[in-house]
Image (tube, rainbow, N blue to C red; front, top):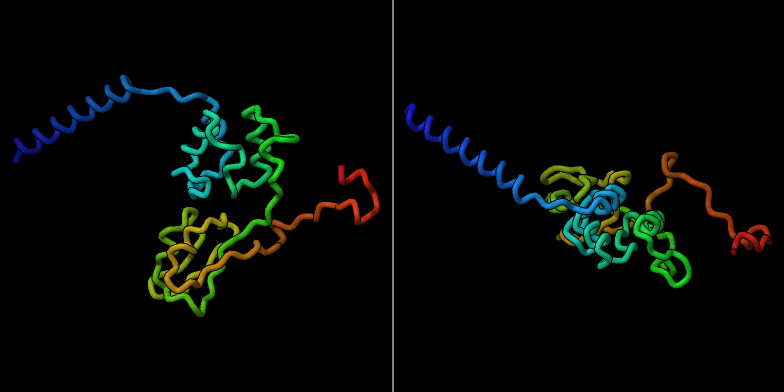
Length: 188
């Protein structure tokens, strides 16, 4: 019994030491711009950008293979921040010409159609869906980022996207328009 414990301890220590040496020897430095871009991204790893996570999206942005508009949950504000950091022209003819601030969508579950299969909250990257097996589920709208992960796996099609409801936490003044007061300076 003691020999088995001693051999397992020696093997664990030896393999741990080998992994530590390999980690130091084969360490690859990432450019600091990747860390800076990744810090701006939401960090939910939802996959809406087409990359497996925010880190992969940040690497693609840093090497120039992805447009600054790749993150739908971040919206136009994130795209403008990324354009500033990466030095991309956000003006006329740039990547941001076709982007308008989209209304944020969140998932909504029709409770009368929900069977409580738990497939949706297993796929949710932000844990915005609450429920239990064979019980009705609901969505925490403050945590939902509007990805399609839950909608794709729902067998009863009980989940849809709806505009995020306005509450005291997310209420804001609507942006003024030129037509509202006849001032042409606002449209420029």
